[in-house]
Length: 192
Image 1 (cartoon, helix red, strand yellow):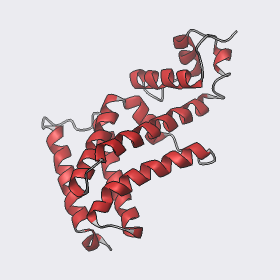
Image 2 (cartoon, one colour; image 1 turned 135 degrees about the vertical axis):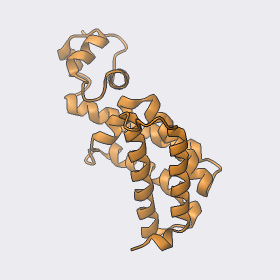
Image 3 (spheres, helix red, strand yellow; image 1 turned 90 degrees about the vertical axis):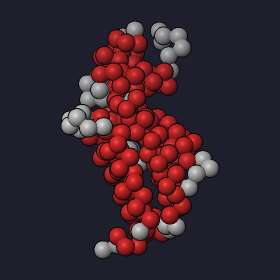
Image 4 (cartoon, helix red, strand yellow; image 1 turned 30 degrees about the vertical axis):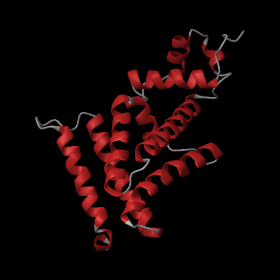
């Protein structure tokens, strides 16, 4: 008999909380079933496999990140937009390290229309933030890749404890944002 109130959303949320506490790599179906207080076979009524569970976490996280970044840039453009987006992104990654890892380490399943929709929503938020620099077409795409790669790199290194020097990481993040702003302001000069 199924546990009352247990559904796919509850299972994915519990798995996401476990990923934050213990890491996405350490997440197992057995650990999740134990946390939920159900028998392991009962878990498969809600998710097909561990890979499917990780995909569901990634999908939920990307949807949440898209929403948070979109809220952060409301009413802002250019420098103010990318700074607000980056701060929201970084705050999420710091607060939810396991979820962030799921969103960045698990490749989206683009055969799932939900994954396509969420990926487009995330890209559109970044594009909206960057349009304040007057970028369009291919330049907008290249700039979005540049900004996303830099932001993900910084947040990932920070999350892994890679900034070990006794120097404020917040100041480094501010410098990263200022450098990104300068690069985006002179994007036409950055073309090969």
